[in-house]
Image (cartoon, rainbow, N blue to C red):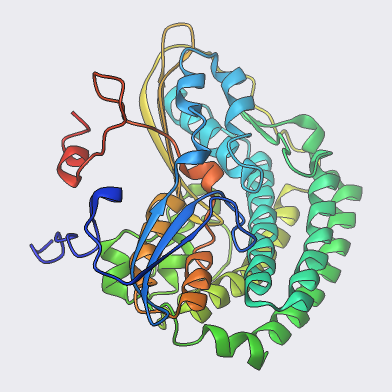
Length: 404
């Protein structure tokens, strides 16, 4: 990486101590009708044009990693599923996946298919929530409500599989819970529901993407070119909307037998980020259908032939609705969690939007931040305290040294 690519000084100030030369500051949040999540944005504007932006994300800190320290791994998985309510399956799956890699636990094929099915259904319902929120911010209530209406059949299918609508509790060490096994009768019922869902999704997305009032507010605004996306480490649909053709599913062995296409657009504007997620709903529906067909039957879904013990630090990456999700930890001799680390997509995606919104009209800048689909419940993970008990800011050099 060149020296120019490493130069963040244009956008990285010193918090409240940063010298301001702009005529007006517009703070939005932590609680605001345009925000789904509790973050505070300070827009520095001149003639309603955003000249600088600063985002604070502290309120959602819950100390999840500290809570998990020393906890038995099976009990810890109850907590990891509750890191987020929208992508609960992704967090649980990645937590379970980390231990399975370290303990060399083999997973039945039917169980792998059920895990994929749950994740893709979760991706659809997450993207539909995003579309609803984007339309709400744009002032298009009709599409917002229609998007929520489209989400309901997805939640019903998840309920049919797991018995739950939010925390599905599907993956466990060695496979999935036996109650989520997809018998022939259940598989047929799910496929019938998927037929209706597919048809309605296609109609809704086609109508949504063709709407002039929606697209005119999004096209050419909040442009994030490929170089900027790489520089600020955008991930997931936010990155793919800027021409970065990467998705962790292409590296996950669980997806190797599935036929699907990655959605990659080059425009990099707000419209592209919305369109990417809308089109990914159709891709996920296609994968979900294949997963049901692979999982149907009486095949085993849980491998109990393994032993809990010590495990060196393991790392796992998966693709959740907002992008790259990283989990890492080790187990001691008693199978207890040590040094759990979670890194979620919003950390880098929201930082990217903080840069991209500069130059937008103020009303458009709020939409720009929303188009990365931020999730602060997942995102905020640590607070640095110095020896005197005060919060301490970390520089880029501190992070590269490991925070020492």
